[in-house]
Amino acid sequence: MYKGFHIPIPDKYKIHGIDVSYYQGRIDWQLVKKMREDSVHITFAYIKATEGILQVDPYFQRNWREAAKAGIICGPYHYFRPEKSGKWQARFLLQNVNPETGDLPIAVDVEELDGASPEKMRTELTQFLKYISAHSKSKPIIYSGLKFYKQNLEGHFDDYTFWLAHYYEENLDGNRQIRWAFWQHNDKGGVNGINHTVDFDVFNGDSLAFKKILVK
Image (cartoon, rainbow, N blue to C red; front, side, top):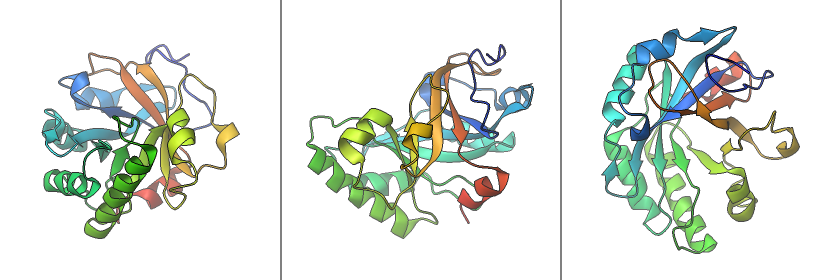
């Protein structure tokens, strides 16, 4: 248990991060960057940018600007709505942010069907991914809970890298067949400068592998 962060943190991973949205409120990113316990500190952050085809996270622009100023490597994520056009969701996201060199690639958060069939979800997600790949500098990453992935995504997007949510476990070693880069391992972390609990993530690799995943 890391007392400062309020949670156990998997020891085998060396690059740690968080993901945030309006839920965390106004964040002091300088305090986030300065926090350290043993060798654990926040290197990267995924920041919610958009949702569906109309909603921009109210804290996105501030988080995107201030986190980068603090020296944290950032990537935007889009909350996907399966009943909406995947192409229009991708266009909406890119109207609000398009990562530059040195940023993390765009992530798309797919974790519910919203009444759509799995087939409809996969069709619209495919359109989203194709549009982002064609109109940005990098191939997007797919975020999902491990259970949702196994029920709805497994075997359909093997050409993509995943960011998996699977809480309160020591590792993801039982899921080595999945090509994953990030693991959201806890949703109850505490960080200086953030007044609410926050999701914690690790990167699956060393500093050299981390650099390779950044937007070129």
